[in-house]
Amino acid sequence: MDVLLHFGRTEQPDLGVTEIATALGLTKAAVHRILTALRSRELITVDPSTRRYALGPAAVALGRAYLARTDVRAMAAPELRRLSERTRETATLSLRRGDTRLYVDQVVSGQELRLEVSLGIPSPLNAGASSKAFLAFLPDFEVDAYLARRPLAAVTDQTITDPATLRKDLAAIRKRGYATSLGERQAGAASVAAPIFDHDARVVAVISVAGPAPRFEPGTGQTVADLLAAASRLSVRLGHQP
Image (cartoon, one colour):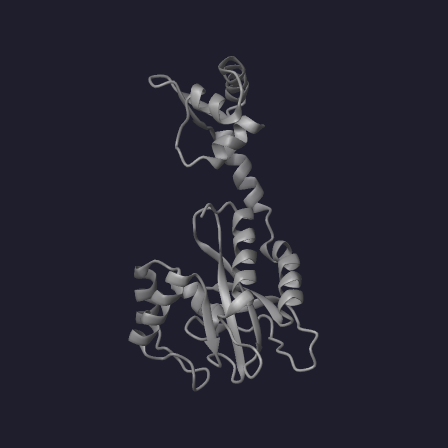
C-alpha cells in the first residue's frame, strides 16, 4: 500500500525501482516484488523500454469510484460547524448551477444578531463573495463567455455591474485565494469565501463565512486563515494537489 500511495503523492509521471526504494526505505528486491504484484492487478503499469512504472487503469478506476461516491455537502458539514464555532459567524457552502450559484448548506451563528441565508435560491455569479469565488477561478474564456451571455445585474446598490471593475476584482481574488463582499448580494451583510477544488483543479464548491456588516470585517485576521485551511482540507479530500 505504501508503494501504491507513493505513486499518488509524487508529481512525477513515472518512477523507477531505485527511486521508490530510496523514498520508502525498502530494498530494491522488495520493491520489485511489490510492483510485480501490483502489475498483476493492473494497479501499476510498466514501460518496457524504460522500465519505469506508472499508475495503471485499475488505480484510475478506484479513484473515479471514490469521487463518484463523494457527497461534497456531507463532507463539508464538519468544516462548516468548525468554522462557525471558531468565527462565531455563519458558515455556508455553495454550489454552482450554470450561470448561477446557490447556498446548499449553512451553520448559523449562535449570536443574537446573526446572518442566515436562504438555501436553494439562485444568485448571479457577479453578486457576493461566494459567487465571485466561482467566477474568479474559471478559465478566461469562460469568464468572457459569461459576460457576453448576460448583463451584470444589480442585486443591491453595491453589486459590481461594470465588466472592467469585475475583471479587476476577479484578478485580485485569484491572486490572494479568496473573495470578499460588503453588501454586494445582501444589504448589511459581509462575507469572505474560498473555493474548493477537485482533482482536476476545478472549483466544485465554495465555502464562506458571513455576518452582519457592522460587526464582521471580511478578509481580515484569523477568519481568513481558518477559511483557507478548511477549503484546503476539503480540496485535498477531493484529490486536489496544490
